[in-house]
Length: 135
Image (tube, rainbow, N blue to C red; front, side, top):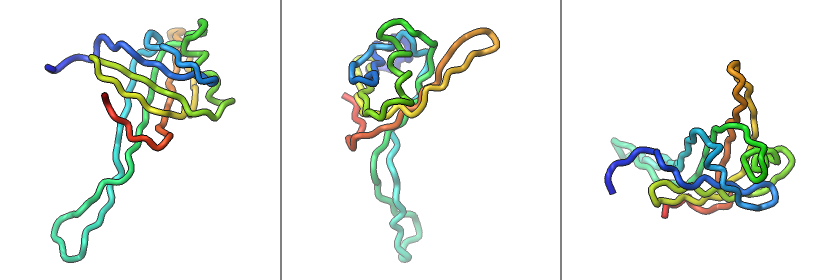
């Protein structure tokens, strides 16, 4: 496949607090996510350059969007962040490539801008012990 833009994002779905997967791609305006790996320094005193080994994999995501309290939309998904302690499925698909990750939603901050816009910036972190893998 050739280089592409981020246009045409087809799937951004997150479980609500009761475990129902909700397609909220229309409410998300931008997203950033990462799949870092821990790195351990194992350099012996006999070396003149660093030796490292990879450790555990991780996942984090910041989803920004527009407040939508319609049935089955983003407010229903994220409003339970403070009252539930449940692992949720996060599914993202772009250009036929899918990343499915178990996450905790750690906050649901809302911002009312000077222009009147009501937006959110929701952080999520990986859980469940599975390595985030694209398919």
